[in-house]
Image (cartoon, rainbow, N blue to C red; front, side, top):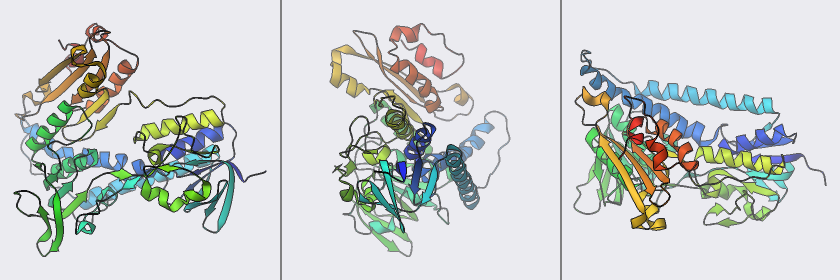
Length: 450
C-alpha cells in the first residue's frame, strides 16, 4: 500500500521537531502537524519565556547588591507591559526560526489539529493524510484540581506570559518547580507573593537539602509560604480574589492566583481519537516501550505525552533516537537515568543522579556517605545579603562512586551540567579529589569537599 508520507508527526514541539528533521535527513518523506505556534511548550509558553522572565526579575537584587561595591543607590522602575512585549517578540522570532528549519530540512508543515481516522490515517481539517509511520509528540498541558469551588478564577502557566496588568498581590497554588519558579519571578519583579503548599516543603522528589535550602532562600527574599495548607474555596470580590484556607489561616486576598498543581498528557491526548488508531493509553499517558513504540507497531510516541521523564532535552533525545532507529536503521533508545535537571528558582537549584534518600534505599544507610558544604558565596561578601550556597555529593562507600551531585546557588544549572558528565561516566570521590579547582569559584567546592 502506498502512503502520502513515510512519517507523519503530530505535534511540532521539541520531540516532534527533532524527530521529523532527523528522519528527513535519512531521506524519508516527512510532514508535521501542528495546531499552535511551532516550538512546543518549552519555546512558546515554558522554559524559554520563563527563563527570560527569571533574568528580568534578578535585576532588582542586583541594584541592591551594587551598593555594597561602591555604586550609588538608585530607585529603578519596572515596566511589566514592556517585558511581556519583548518576551513575546522573542517567542515569535523563535517560532519563525523553527518553521524555517523545517523548510530547510524538507519537512512539510501542516497547520491544524490532527485526529486519527484509523491506524494509518489522520484527519487535519478537510484533509485526510496517510502515513506508513506515525509519531505522536503532543506534549502535556496544565491541569487544575476539580474539587475547589472557584478554581475557574485561577490561571495556569499558559496565561502567565500575557497578563495585561502586573499583579501586585500574587498567590501560587502548588510547590512544584513551575510554581516555585514563578513565585521567584513575581517576587523579584516586586509583587507580594504567597505560595500555598499541601506539604511542609516545596519540590517533592528532589533531594531534601535542595528542598530545604531553596525554600529558606526564597523566604529570605520575601516569599511567604503557607505550608500544610489547602484552599477551600476562591471567591471574586470587589477587593480581589479571596482565598479561604484550611487550618488557622486567615483568608487571603490577591489580584492573581497561579494554579501550578501539575501537568498531564490527557488534555492533549483527548482530541486525537486514539481509539480509532488502537493506541493504548495507560494512567492518562500513551503507553510505550523503551524504544518509544506504542501498542501499534508503526505508531510511536515521545516526550511528555508518554509521561516518562518530562524534560525538553529528553523529548529531543527520544525523538532523535526514534528516527535513528526506524529510518536510520541504527537501533538505540534513551536511558532516563542520570539526567540532570534544574529549578530556576531564586536561589537556583540543580541536580544529577540519586538523591540521598534514593541512595540509602538502594544501598543501605551504612554504604552511603554524604559530603556537604554550605557557605556564603564570594560575591555576597560585600553586599551584606544573607545568601548561602549548598553543594553536596552522595557517594557509595564500597566503590567510592559518586551517585549524585546537588547544588543550590547562583549558576547551579551551569555547574551541574558539567558534573552530569562525571556522574554518568562513573567518577569516584577520588576522581573529584584529584581534580584541581578553579579559584576563586563556587564550583571548586565540589573538588575540595572532605
